[in-house]
Image (cartoon, rainbow, N blue to C red; front, side, top):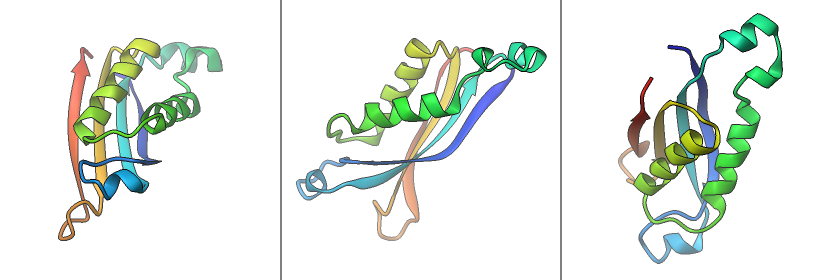
Length: 117
């Protein structure tokens, strides 16, 4: 299975369950593994057959910064749903990390897989 990867997509957004968190922007780091048949793009050297990293990154940033969200679990599901429905990605692994959420950890996070590869 071919995969298109995005690592540590940095999204500054309002995220959290506490009142003080709802007043500030925090950083989320998103890793994506997306199933994609890269053969047509490689064979033709034609961008129209590729899954555009910039388009995906911009769309997900807009999606996650559109309104405050409480849980990173919600963020992960929103991302998977967007990729599968808007970009027709058949399978995705989404990791969402929240640096600094626990003082004694570098980051905490969730990882989900959706679809079929």
